[in-house]
Length: 212
Image (cartoon, rainbow, N blue to C red; front, side, top):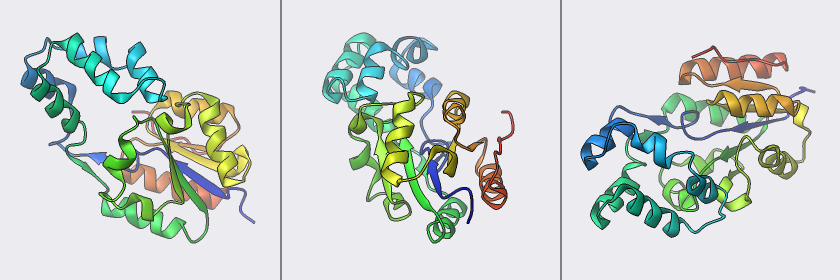
């Protein structure tokens, strides 16, 4: 029996790829007339964003705060919210990987995402047909790299950490999974991710992605 029995994937920049037409801070800062770098300084990683990621504040309250902080009109705020989802694609080769895996392994996804993510994603990209379930941080109350987020998915899958391959693009999330004893792959790009996942499953051992 393979040592690895389940695989847990991140969504953004792992299973999903953002095209050139997709979301970028600098593009939206120019479009909204904002100072360069303000999104990284004031919004992403802020107390309010962290609270929204784990469902501690309603998403509407978070967006009201963003609008007030950045002094955006209602239309600008709506465009910005929708713009976060622009240019996201599930590449055919990634979908093919998931199709191959589902016959041999338990496959799930764990995403740091706001409370509207399920409605934004499922039924649009077809990802829900390729994994057993998707755990969104705003729904489970924990976000990566909190160990409780990983353990929630592991317990749902009915496996041990050392039997569960974890795949994510962020080094902090990969390191937290490895600290729990999970084999890991850090995604740098889709082709590298596919290669390293297949290698890890073949070997049943720890595989690290290339350093960005």
